Length: 283
Length: 259
Image (cartoon, rainbow over all chains, first blue to last red; front, side, top):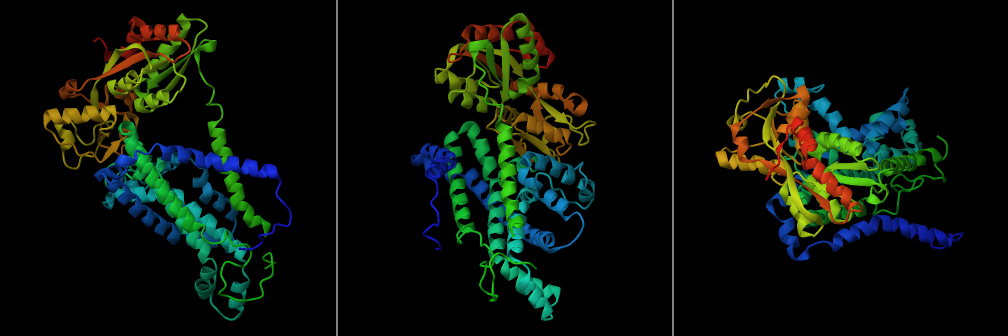
């Protein structure tokens, strides 16, 4: 908690607009919550298909978040620290899933891992069938969630600066040691929030999954797909399950942003102590 | 220092602009006052209703038909939430009944077409499907609609009547999703409507099966009481059930809807 007394006041009208912005998000959620059939809420969210969908969603999202960490950490480090031509282009490409409609991602995945896809023939020969399997769900989720981890982590790496890494290197640490002992601990909060965000994005994945993985209870029908299907015949069930997803999302966001905002400058962690000047300095 | 922090902000801005741009232009309400007739029709009617609307406009100068296609359940939900529609054409009786019960129809709904199930297979029928029973072969990757949507309900009823247990690898939300999985070659077979096979052209082959006659789906159409153009809406319903509408529907593979 710093800076309770602001130097300058905020114009009054900003509060009005800010309230409006908050309403844009909160009002529809509140309207949905108002429609929940509380009398049947428990039976609706604990029905067999609902539990199967919730379980599948949680399992696949954990797996996807794990894959995002394994693949995204090296990518973020290379993007933030590496020096190579066209790194800007690579960054733009990697972040593309953030702005692409997920259904486009699904189509792209289909033409990559599908039976007639780029790798499909090879995979089929190896006895691997991806389409209509839980693996397809995880691939779709990883595709859409990876940028969240990369953006969070790359931001943390860049604002963290390279002073400690430079010092460690001058003290004789190898690049591998520097990465493990200095870089990773420094950006741990950024990594954690990136992982949580990619988990959350995976949990909400819908379009790419529907297009690429199909929809079968217990195998590929995640919670968002179950909601979409229930809406056809049982709006009460759809609303109840939506509320479950909202609750999980709220918990996840709270977890990701529990720390006092994104650390500006060097406050990310206190472990390496050094004279930390404001503003990152020049390295 | 400022550069890296701009990145997320820029991304956010890009996302916001993209999503707003996507919504713009859709909100123009198509309601009766200026000679516009808003027709909400099931997705499977897309090509035939596009033709029908064109002919209808030619016959009724001054009326512009605005078509909106989606799943019948979606459309019924939109209409009951106050979407400005003059005519509703559903792919099943259930969704029409919802609006009837809510008192939103102008008079009775009328069945104007029927659709039967067909088996769609990739060209050349690689899995060798020759009958409905073949769909249950082990190793056959069948894709069908979920029971909650009309095409899935029809498939389930055929399966029940024949005593064949289907084990689809995926139960899709719409018949177009099923067709897409067959066209892309992901599925060995898909249970779709006869009209879908027709509209897919040569991209899928069709395996007819006699059991399909046991689960015929009727399509009802009705003018809506809340529409701003009731006279034109009634004309449109008549036109769909009339000779010209029926001819277009028959060409798309629909059966006659006389009941």
